[in-house]
Length: 553
Image (cartoon, rainbow, N blue to C red; front, top):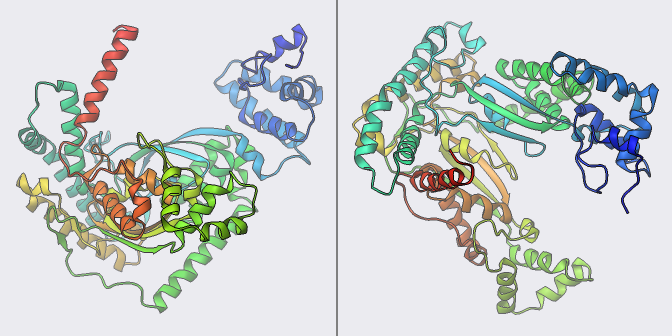
């Protein structure tokens, strides 16, 4: 039965709850810190959440709740006053109740603008608790200049204070100049190669050709290029993100962490204060020491390759990417079968293993096929049994490709520093359109500047001058369940041909060692490239028409 509230109580609660008579409701008009404190108290009370809110928050004069709500009514500056009062309230009420997990009950949206493509990867690196969204290199041209007429890229403080400042600026300007200069001729080339047909609208065609041009030209953009990242996350995840950024060797990262903490402290202060306090600072030092120790060990083992005098240019359409399956479960089918049957059984794991081990091969195959089921689309993904099997891939691909695949956070991945060591991948369209010389000139200039910066002791800062067409090495460890999601999604025809080629190779590697699991990946697209976004843009046209019919113009 629904809890009974008096008419007066209902009137009060209706300001803070989306309903007062149902068992499922949302909280509204409360600072995040108050909601975190409320849920924390709720977890240690026999009362309902609405009753806790009434008895221990709203009607408790000592809580200061009335002041918080009164300050927050008008919005704007008053809302910040409410949050400050809520911070005091949180510390009073949660003595004896709060712990680290409470910080997961309050969240915030934050925008980080004009950050480099090195910093944006750090912002997006967290697997749990944060949801980032970044300005796309596929739908937005990066040829804009600031009010002073300069291209929008990071002028890194250590580099700009060095004798290499002018060369760094010239190289980045060359990359942006070439990128900007090629937009119009590359658009003409793409339109001539893929003319519009009658069933394609002008809007869909313009969007698809624009995406194709952006895909081709992004290989020239340096990692210093400014981008924007919006993030929604909980306080605990933000705190740990900033902790890692404070421990970075890069000045941009440390400055960004400081700016983020300053702004998040205005909305969820209690949840982020430990990123750089007496608890956070020793943890930062611990992270730095571990990194330095591993760098020393890698040096002893001579794990760093000598930089070539000139960059290797990878021939167009050769797809030099390397996909090496270095580790996988040899006992995969056995593990998966037991996990598939466990939830429908009353036996222990060891007992089920004994039963599974006695099954003939055909019976095992039948059970696995039944668990995969009749998948009608890629969203019909097999369940958690597939999380008991993992694959580790050593990957080598261009930085643009890495950026796209980096978005997948339900896996373990680490990259090496971005360098010019492994070569520059030449897009076939640049060659076909007659702009190979311009691209090679950019790659050579970036390589020369990179080598000078690295030799001057700025190995991490040197990343900023490296264009996205250069190859980078990283590894990924993922479960079979995540492999289904990643490979089927990223092999879709509307995806960038670079990362499509990589996940297609991942699929073939899994197929070699586990053909039965690969057989269930029914929605892997093994086709080549083209005007990738066209079909998607046509679908958008249909949706726009449906919206027009539903809501009018």
